[in-house]
Length: 194
Image (cartoon, rainbow, N blue to C red; front, side, top):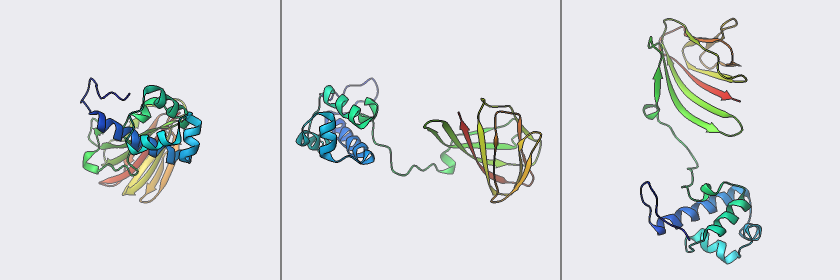
């Protein structure tokens, strides 16, 4: 049965049932399975699955494991709140790191883990010393879209100049640099790790 005890903030049994119900509905919709197809794949009754998705059932651990297996997801995906359809990071809310000269401010917009890890940053750059970046892991690729101003970017031996609206991709596993050519240059940086 669903247990609402936890070492973190407690959640009551009814809230946990609602959470599981929403997760199962969302995961079933994402998988494209009908109610009958998922119930059959999990070897549970269609009425039982309907009650779980409605938040009216209190499924045991065996039932949840069977559902997770039939959906092809980790067990914990059934217990966590469903992720929102649209994920927004407001500029002022993103964590920010700055280089020693304060010529570059990197705001982490998102981090995704699929086959590869992908990070997306909102960059604000100012003219000054070049930002020479050390190589990342082998196979890392950087993608840069200039949204305002002008930027010199790329592998140290083969930099390119980009204007507003220009995009460039380059290997991030070698020495590379960023240099703002005008004040308040902005860019979106996506780093793709192997």
